[in-house]
Length: 150
Figure 1 (cartoon, rainbow, N blue to C red):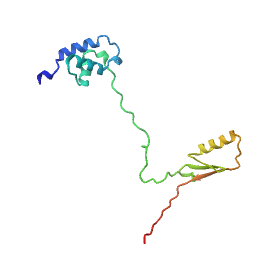
Figure 2: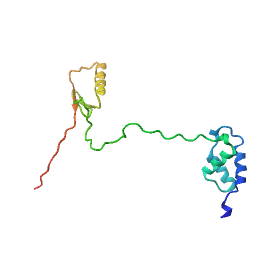
Figure 3: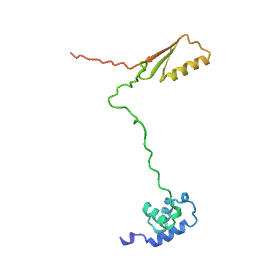
Figure 4: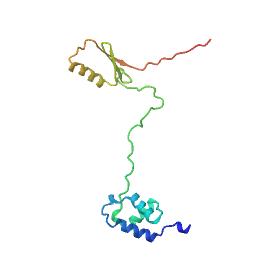
């Protein structure tokens, strides 16, 4: 078990030789150093130990600490409990925000009023008639069915 331990002084000398040409902290590649250590001594080190050793040998090559994770703002994504449909105050038309655009026989769905306006603008730009254009506001319909088995 005593043979399994690395000689710290020899490793320190090896790492010092490995770091002598490096000037920028971004050039320090711990995996490459670890690979060279394994090739030289037949055994590697735990990367945090290696990082501490590099910090002791060459303090100018210390990499900056990682920044803290950014905090989310606002509501979390996903469905909210207890809300069956999106309720909008002041806009009774299309409470879920969808519109059915009918041009002649062609039907298409538009997710918002802007999309409906874009579809109309596209028709006008193409020089088509708006005579057969119809726009319907979709709203949720609460339908329940009961099945009687006799």
